[in-house]
Amino acid sequence: MAFIVRQSGRLVGTFNNYLQPAHIGKRCISTSKKNDETAVVTEKIPSHKATQNSHDVNSTAAATAAKKKWMSYGFHPTDQYEDVASAHVFSFLGVTLCMVLGSLVYYYGPDRTLKDWAQREAYLLVREREANGLPLLDPNYVEESKIVLPSEEELGDFEIII
Amino acid sequence: MLMLKFGLCCLGMMFLLKEWLLLISVLTILTFFCLTFMMNFDLGVINLIQLDFLTYLLVSLSLWVTALMIVMSFYIKHSKNYFEVFTSLSLAMLFFLVVSFSTSNLLMFYIMFESTLIPIFLMVMGWGYQPERVSASFYLLFYTLTASLPLLMGILYINSQQFSTDFSSLVVPNSDYLLFWMLIIAFLVKLPVYLGHLWLPKAHVEAPVAGSMILAGVLLKLGGYGLIRFLPFVENSLSEFSVLLVSIGCIGGVLASIICMRQTDCKSLVAYSSIAHMALVVVGISLNSFISVAGAVIIMIAHGFCSSGLFSLVGMIYDRVSTRSIILIRGIVSVGPSMTLWWFLFSISNMAAPPTPSLMGEIYIFMSSLNWAGVLAVFVGTLSFFAGAYNLYLFVSTQHGTNLSGCKSFTEVSVREHFVLISHMLPFLLFLVLLTNIYS
Image (cartoon, rainbow over all chains, first blue to last red; front, side, top):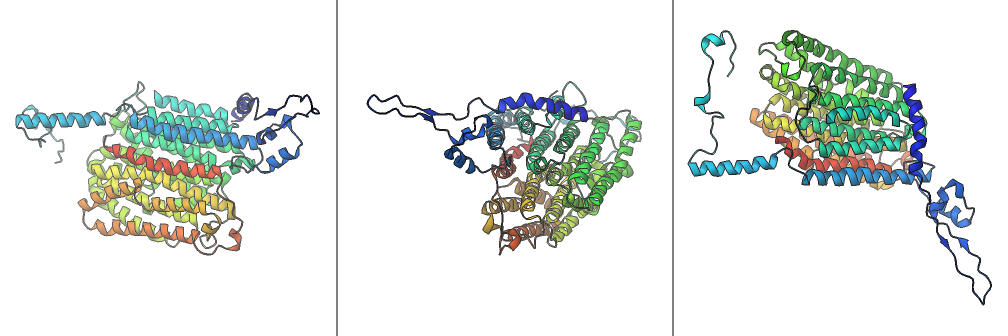
């Protein structure tokens, strides 16, 4: 048990990188220098997602205000990034993959349980039996002439229940 | 081979205990593959594994409910209450369940059947809310252990007679009534049937949300699964005792439904409603007709989703107001209307309203029971009536009325909780078409 917990902790680091993309919503708007005007100071206008990256904390009022507007999706109370990532992962895997794609594959997939085949075969047999004048459903599952019953000596004391 | 791979995946997921996001992702992907590619019902290379439609349904249900119970248990993670241990117990239980539903060996089935007790015992004992959880976990453990000891003795006796523990060697002589009871008593207590039901309300009330979800969603179905698996081999003995079993099922179900009306604890009410639903399953299996067993299977699957969803709803209420009392939880519609929507949907599903699969299962059982004996119309009708009554009571008591001061601060249902509830309700409705294939 302790071994498993230690190993799982070591695996965490390798997977965490996949949850953190390199660039999160960094948009830069810059204008070229006007010839007849004073130079315009270009500044990065961060989106609300830029505040998640702890290495790129902007202390601007806009970033602070954007951060305050975040409400947890319920997956993590404090870490916005993990919360949003979890919501996206679960929505994709749970709803899109399992429910939508799963239903699609189930309903439109090949007839693995031979249900449709059985229905087609039944209709064919009904047509054949009607053409030959036979009853549609024979009360005997197997033809009586093909049944070979054991003799009384072979049965002995074997209990028969009808 | 596919089932063996599933079993190995369950064990392999033990290495993802700390990374819950990946763990739940793997569980949902496994469910997807199970639903879509496990439809080849043929014996694999390994004789230990068998597969048919019932196994397919129950394994899919186990995987899905396990994923959802881990999603509902985030409060354990955030309170740093040994979440890795909790997750490992859930995965162990999933492994035991998957193997027990898919094995063709009697002894392996028994071992897995008993092994599922250990994780649920530890969950109730370790993560339950009140001091009564000690007593409840012991009730759960000893009721099931005591009732399944005759099952082990029966399996060993069959092994001594037939020199094999495969299901195909399960030949019960027609007049061996003792062996019949030894084999089925464990499943009757596991379901639970009315007279062996005392452990269920205790265990459900004291269990954490996830424990209640897996207990109601899957573990009770072990009993039904065992009965259905053993049914072809005990048919003659069953015909001798079918009157007794149907009577216990019908009367027990009616009594459990009436007891529901007296409950003041939401969880206890849902637990007793589980007993009433499983009573119908017992009736369906005891009648031993094609349509009644089909109805029993449908009710088992429908109840798995519905009851698990109801327990998660009660858990959400408990997270907010710290009580499960029906008297204190009132007027949720005025403070949390989105939760009211889910309460309504799950309440009507629990009372078998159309278009839910519950209605389909109940209709099948009603048809077969009326065909068996007309007097059963009184009991199944009463059971159905009280099912509507206690679900209505639960819904109206918790949602309508003036909410008390303790319920004023009520956070809205989060996206995670909506996800859990949608994941209960949508497959529940989608399974309706899948369950019509029950005759294949």
